[in-house]
Amino acid sequence: MHIEIRKAGFVNKGAQLMLRGILQEMRRAFPDARFVMAPNPKLAPYEDRARMGFYQKAWYWRYRRQWGNLARYLPQRIRKMYGIVMDSEIDVVLDASGFSYGDQHDISNLFELADSCKRWKKNNTKIIFLPQAFGPFKTAKRQKLMKTVIENSDAIFVRDEVSWKHMTDVNGEPPQLKRGHDFTNLIDGSIPEHIHDIEEDYAIVPNWRMTKDGNKTDYLNLLKEVVDYILIKGHKVFVLVHEGVEDMKIAHELNSMLEHKIEVIKEDDPLKIKGILGACKGTFGSRFHGLVSALSQGTPSLATSWSHKYKMLMQDYDFAEGLIDLDIEKEELHKKLNLILETNAANAIQKKLLERSDILKAGTKQMWNEIIEVIETKSDSRM
Image (cartoon, rainbow, N blue to C red; front, top):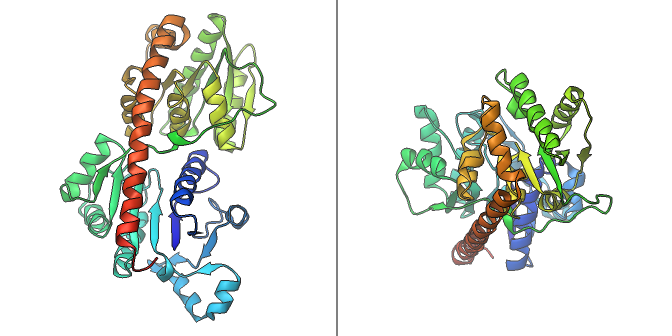
């Protein structure tokens, strides 16, 4: 059986965590399956795909056409020799986009997706969307394209209530629409050997997306006030760079504003990032999967937001009051920070987070059982 993992990658740490989570569960359920990924030089370079044992999908999308089908003219023995898999040979597609379909994204994403879903359905390929955020879909064209996607899919796990409304506004509540939550909560992290004594420290996890729409000054000033207050309260604090160059720039700009510089930690392994976030005392985060990694391990965390998915995540963990607006007043910010800085308040939050984490992890395990059932029930003819 060929299982394509779609839209996960190796640059974004959240995407890497999702990829590891998918492989962990699918290899357990289908040990003989072959995993396939389409080429993407920016997000999924060949070296990374090969290192993890992926077969290479013959795929090249341009001008609203899938040109990878031209590889069918290669003899099958040649394709097999180089590990090339045709689109028509895929049995299951697992879409792990995270957040790619809606008005905030280029409509070309939806054109390609709708076209692919129709083709896969005709080929009896199972199409499963792993938990992710969707929408909104305000134009008639986007709604029509998303309706096509829904009608040709086998299961779509919607990650939050806002996304659920966006999806049901398009096509009601068909049986393939299902509730789901972020599934990286089942993955264990590990603390890097060179990281020591962070159990009493607080982590700042920046996100360059917070600086868009002219918000850069406000965001940097907010981070500076957070760091200053943590230091005034007698705690240690560091910056953890969850993503790449742009987040590192934010870290350096923040440090340039501080009277006393703080440590900047950059770690490429997403499992080690998760280990750090699970070990520290608390976090102030702007990266979605950085927050998932912290909250799912009971680490008290405050969050900023550039998308509705952050608000929904904090609600999932019953900590809606942990969401911070950029224009928050200083006195109110200090009250929020005390929730994670003061021992009694932080202990109460940690207890609540761990209780919610257990519930959400049980939901994730149930989701994988449903996915496995969809694959086993409907793919027998191709397995």
